[in-house]
Image (cartoon, rainbow over all chains, first blue to last red; front, side):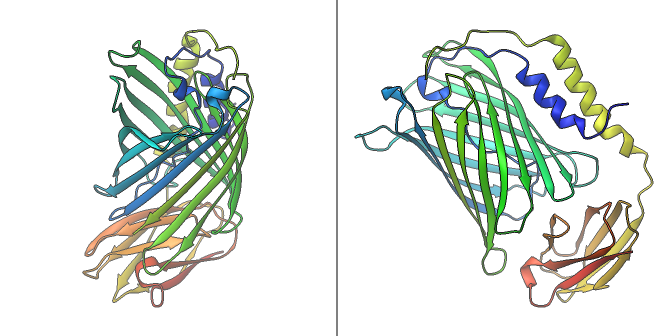
Length: 242
Length: 120
C-alpha cells in the first residue's frame, strides 16, 4: 500500500520524467518564478513586487533583470485576481515594460479538509511589442507534515501568436519549507520547465503591521541542474497585503 | 546557457497516474467522521476563548461571526487563516494535533480577539 505522503513526490516524478519542448523567445529560458500556495482569503488586497536577477556565462543571458509589479484583490473567499506589468532590463539598458499578465487563483478545498490542499491558477500573459501570448493552467497542491510544508505547482502552458510557433509546454515548481517562525521560514525550491532545471535555498517570512496589513517577503538563490538553466538566479518577492 | 534540449512527449502512463493520485489523495477523507466544534465572535471577542479538542484527531471548527464587521481567525501555530465577513460563518479544519496549547487571534482586532485551542 502506498503512503499518503508519496502523492507530491509522484507528481514531481510524473512531470519531470517527461522531456522538455522547444520555445522561441530566449528570455523565456529561465523558469524560476515563485511557488503559489492554493489558498485565498476574502477581502484581501495586495501590491506585489517580484524581481528575478540572473547571471550566466552566456553574455546575452548575463545580468538580466526581470521585474514585475502587480495589484491583486479577492473576488470572494475562493477567487483571487491579480494583474501585473512585466519589465526586463539588460545590462547598460533601461528597464523596458515588455508584457502584462492577468491571473486568477481559485481555491478548491478548505485548508486541512483533505490530506492535500488543492487550488488552480489560470494565467494569461501578452507581450506588448510582439504577437506572443501565453495561457497557463496550473494545479496547486500543498500538504503539511508537522512544521514542514510541501507545495507543488504543476501545469501546462500554451504559447501562441504570429511571432511564435504555437506549442504546449509543461512545467513543475515545488517548495519544501520549514515553519520555523512567522518572520523567518527557510526552505528549498525546485523549478523545471522546457529549459529549466534549478534548485536552491529560499527564505520567506511575514511581518505584521497594523490591523490586517502585512508584509510578505521571499528571497531565493537557484542553481542550475542542467546546461540550459542560468548559472545563478536570485529571486525576490515583496507583497504588501491590506 | 548551452545547447537547448529537444522536444519529447510526456508518457501517457504519467498523465493517467497523475489523475489517479489526485483522486486517491482525496478519497480517504470523503467519508471520514470529523467532530464538529463551534466558536462565536461577538463584540470582537471569541466565545469560548478556550476550546478543548481531542489529540491526534482532525476536527471541523465552525466560526460564527455575530458582529457586523469582518474578522480574521488566525494562528501561526495552527497554520490557519480565515476571513469571516460580518454576520456570516466560516469553516476551519484543524489537526490532527499533538497535546498542547495553540493560540489564535482575530487579526482585525488583535488586542481583544484572543483565544487558544487546548489539545488533550
